[in-house]
Image 1: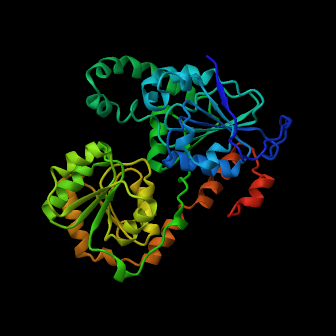
Image 2: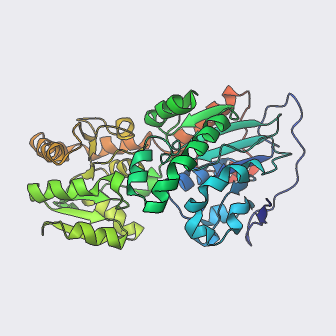
Length: 412
């Protein structure tokens, strides 16, 4: 297998050659850094983590399986991107998940000779690169691959006939490689306690919990008089986020619910089951999304997520969250203080949660208290966590000159 190198786009910073770090030297300044990210075909939570790492390491190179420059941010495009051979397979930006069985070998053939620090960003295959023996390899894990582990049976049940037949053999081989490749990592970080537990269970490795960076400063409360009387559900309309639960519960409650998200096919299917009190608005521009977050009575968050950035964004907007009390919500929502957690992931459980939310007057929680809580998940907290993780491997983080000039926060 061969690899493609995509040079930085026009206007990017110039990357100067630097010497290999000498034995015994532990500062990141002068290190060659490679950040391994599973695929770059859009801007979601994992890519926001990647952006924060790139701000810490502005000269880092990126290694990924699939790269679509038109669908990522200018910050990512400014960096040199090395793609594995997966990127050259037919229709890779659209069909990359079909090539999952080929990704382990593609990763292992990436030559990282000369790099001193390897940071893998794992949700799809990333940590399985073979780092040089003298390099430090840390992994920030968004989740062990859910389609191999905790969500395997759900994914197989929802797959087409052919995929259902081949999935057991393919998944068994990938699981073996997934466990073996975990031994190549020097230190793990997880984006929540929930994910740290799965890392321990499946890979038998401890993980430091470092919450992902949330751009809390992009959100702000609005005056109470400008808020609406509606509840809000937002996100991709996929099964594990449980939009169906919100629809059925609000059919019974007859309270106004606004649903943001797509795809359109899923929206139409859910809309056919919804009463007139539920309004679907599809995908909305960011400015309009911010207005919805700040105007709602509460966010309805009935799925079990690894972390869940949206609840933090809602709290940064001064509004509370009604969330299913498992997964990442346990790390972000404080029951009775920043929202409400419910234990029964059912229509009845959500209906009772909304009624209790109203009976206890939780819609009147202090917006500034919610904002202060959300601020604990900002980018500075994430970057301090990465600094601490590096220190555990005897690597001292020193900001580059570019970071010192451009960073809006200080690492301390």
